[in-house]
Length: 227
Image (cartoon, rainbow, N blue to C red; front, side, top):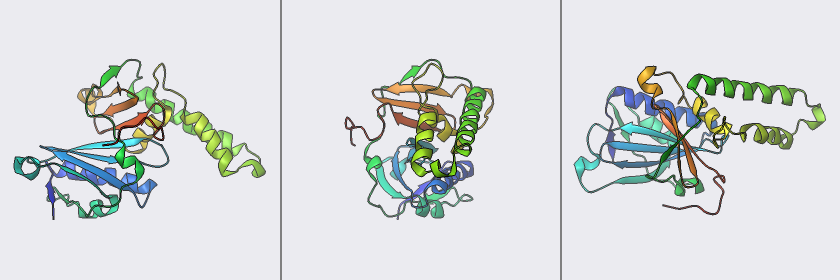
């Protein structure tokens, strides 16, 4: 049994909250865990948004006491959530599961450069609010016979595929960040951590609470690197 010792109760609570939000969108969600040194990265894919969500968690001590060993495994998000002990600041790594296709396609670890033009957090929030309001308005105006899943998906794709300001970031990435609790206020210091980065075909919306990564060509593109 592998036990992860998280940095403190707050890290454990944030990890539990992230897993709970993923499970809200997919009760059978899986997450890929990668740990090395004192950092744990948790990758998930909420199906409604077509993005990768990444939560970085601080560990209390180097994984496996600093030995030349790393953790890289895909597990059930629900089982991992059940194992989180917030008071103790620990989590038990569940048995590995057969990972979904997205788990083999992760953003690069390096080579990121900052992209200009990202609006302020307040403006991003307004942007998502306006998009949600437009979706509701347009779908409510549909005649009953036209209110099909295909038509709702078409309207959703049109709205959420729009880009944010002068950036190439799709609005759905910001919507995902807000829905997963990544756009919460964190004071002046935290605001400086908000940024848009790019590396090859990948874009990453970085916030103090986590990141949203998306491929410009979509996660289903054939030019992917598997690792």
